[in-house]
Image 1 (tube, one colour):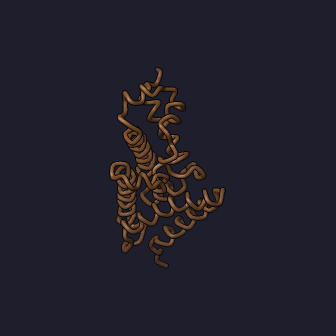
Image 2 (cartoon, rainbow, N blue to C red; image 1 turned 180 degrees about the horizontal axis):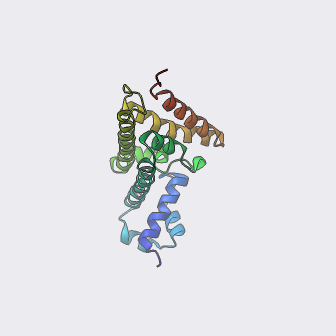
Image 3 (cartoon, rainbow, N blue to C red; image 1 turned 120 degrees about the horizontal axis):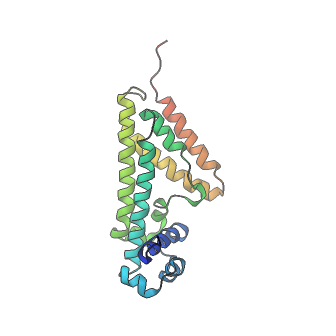
Length: 193
């Protein structure tokens, strides 16, 4: 089944926003990549911001789906947290949603900033749920703060992307996630001797 022009425009906008950011993505570039004309674009979207918002919401949904798949996957809650930190990512391209925080036009627009903020709030909340489950199951220390730990894990992943992109190497990301895994391991209750 052939994709509709609207779907192609959204997908093209997703890719270009990830590659270039909002400010550097022109409607013409989106149309060219989607193989759609100006009339088609403006038939579906009143303007660039509306198309970008649809693309960002789709990217946000995809990020939530992939994160939740790991965080709800097999294993106990501690193992799922470790799996989230270890999951395969396109490190040097960075995060589709995190990329938007570097774009001043996105951050200046409450409408465009909303899916970014909502996605990170959801992610931290979901991580906190799994951390609380691990704590309640006795696989993480009873005094561990789920919200603070979730914020740390989210910051490690997002910061790891930035460090890796700056270095042009996945190594800083791998070091950051290895450090987070070591901190989680250190937060496991001690076995009685």
